[in-house]
Amino acid sequence: MPTIIDGKKTSAEIKEEIKARVLEIKAEGGKTPHLAAILVGNDGASQTYVGAKVKACEYVGFESTLVRLEETISEEELLKTVEEINENPDIDGLIVQLPLPKHISVEKVTNKIKPEKDVDGFTPSNVGRMALNWPAYVAATPYGIVELLKRYEIETSGKHCVVIGRSHIVGSPMSILMARNGYPGNATVTLTHSRTQNLPEIARSADILIVALGKAEFVTADMVKPGAVVIDVGIHRVPDSSKKSGFKLLGDVKFDEVEPIASAITPVPGGVGPMTIASLLYNTLLSAEKKVYG
Ligand code: NAD
Image 1 (cartoon, rainbow, N blue to C red):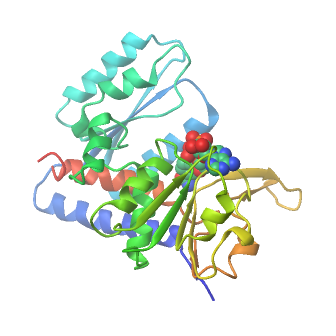
Image 2 (tube, helix red, strand yellow):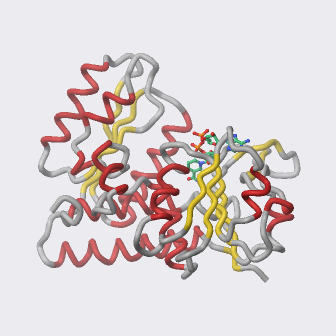
């Protein structure tokens, strides 16, 4: 029977660990970690995500500040708000919920965030530090995957790791993390993407297969080596009239087919997804304790 890598349980454990550490900090008379989130506009999904992040902060005992701005806000005003939070000594971490309205440059806004407070790990400084294997805020999804591999004691050294997808937020950082000198890491990494030829053959040679291409049930059993560890990052909502909600969630991997041949696998839902908020909380704690930039 394969190991089901349970992200829901692991993320709950991480939250308990953070909560315990916050209690210690408070007992020692230290400052309560404080996360600020900027939400621009009224996008429903973004409101849900930010709401969940604020709720998670409350749960672990962090302070949180939600700054809500009109959809019509100018880029200049948004940059000013970022600057104010950068300079506020009480705030340890800042996230700007994406997507932003079209008239605002995500690059400019990201670049304005002080690297010391960039708990989403999106600034060039943090991406560079991660690549150099220096202390860094690693982006939520890659960090969540690394943590799952660690906590499930998955051997990565000398293994062939195939990553499908090269996005800046998942595939590309995952390939860097799996190749770096450390644990998890020391893998021989193949990064594949939409122009890759013979993908099924390459995927079949993976000891560890990390799938983040955004196509529902793309990876089928014939693309997986028996005994491989399979990490499925994809999330897709598909209509399902048998469910009360009217939809079900699918990953990028055809779970029912692949699960019997894998040695370990993340389910969807309940695998990589729940780890993202835990990662954000963890980075905020690191910032409050000055563990990355000193
Ligand atoms: P993206 O669209 O930014 O990137 C997809 C990548 O896959 C691209 O690099 C592209 O070259 C590659 N690709 C596309 N078609 C391919 C093909 N046929 N063969 C090989 N490579 C191909 O996607 P993303 O933001 O990295 O997200 C990927 C998936 O992960 C999505 O389903 C997304 O919803 C999900 N996601 C989940 C979480 C989470 O918390 N679980 C977080 C981020 C993204």
